[in-house]
Image: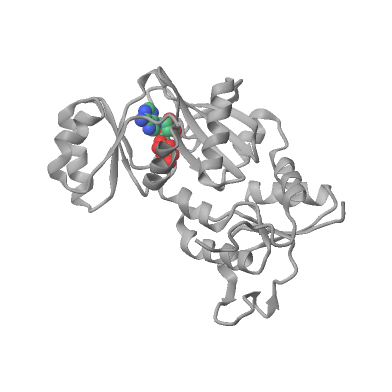
Amino acid sequence: MPAMKIAVLSRNSKLYSTRRLIEAGQQRGHEMRRIDYLRCHMNIASMRPAIYLGDEELDNYDAVIPRIGASHTFYGTAVVRQFEMMGTYSVNESVAISRSRDKLRSLQLLARKGIGLPVTAFAHDTKATGHLIKLCGGAPIVIKLLEGTQGVGVVLAETTKAAESVIEAFRGLDANILAQEFIKEAGGADIRCLVVGDKVVAAMKRQGSEGEFRSNLHRGGSAEVVKITPEERSTAVRAARIMGLNVAGVDLLRSNHGPVIMEVNSSPGLEGIENATGKDVAGRIIDFIVKHAKPSATRTRGKG
Ligand code: ADP
């Protein structure tokens, strides 16, 4: 297998995931480089799409690994799309990244394909609040800001009154929210499945700190390796495939009615999962790219 030239599109070379991807690529003999996508500029008007970093034209990469931060989705996906238009293989395509960044759209896509989800309701008009709460089976319910990450803006309302107040407050701020059935039996834990291609290459259980229903590691949760069931495995792989992601962090809860999906993340952090499981996830991502990246192997070429 000839060596490849692979770019990791990331803002910061010190980030664990970025470092590990570079390292795993180099260990396998590939030429690796971190490129800050916000410093790239593009020539869109010409018949020959081009992308530049300063004076340098970035026209000879075999593959890119997008690590687009949630706050830079717009520009970041434009950069990825430009690479796709040039025929460069992107391990996660721009359309799939954009899709996964919209929580509501993601849930709709997963629901359409029959993936298990917590009962979820969404409204713009606050007049619908009462019905929204009823749809989710009544209090306690979880209310989420659609734009939130790392558990910020995820609230457990224990009573109907509390739920009404929270919904009213968020709506007053003109925020988009969704209401969700509270999966109490998950016990403040979720399962993160790291999917590469059609496999779960690592899985961990995250447990929220004492008295916390949110399991986010950034909120003081702890992680341990977990053995997942065949149903959980196939749910995670199907969810990634429906989103169109080759690399995904699929979060699910263990509910009384089987695994339910919380979220499908297109730039999953590698630190927590590699440390918890001892698996070389970065290496599996590189191996996947080597197997699948052919010139112009990007399915959409930036279309859609
Ligand atoms: P974020 O994307 O900000 O991390 P999530 O929707 O993943 O937000 O919610 C954060 C955490 O809160 C989840 O990992 C899970 O532990 C908990 N949680 C979220 N929704 C529910 C729910 N409907 N029932 C039970 N726990 C939930």
